[in-house]
Image (cartoon, rainbow, N blue to C red; front, side, top):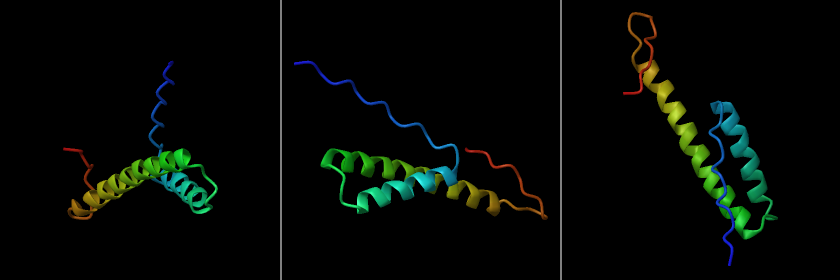
Length: 79
């Protein structure tokens, strides 16, 4: 029996706003109740990825704000 090709993981969003917009679209589709079960699961997984991305971006901004020193914003490094 031939195996179906493994679907490629969706690309990471280019920005927080893009991720939020995609998350909103997914949520609307899921709440509509018209998705088949497998598509619903895919949407849930993608939503989880987008949520993780958004949380990471918010945390990075929060970290930058916390390093304000004498009115100057220091560059944030992901260490």
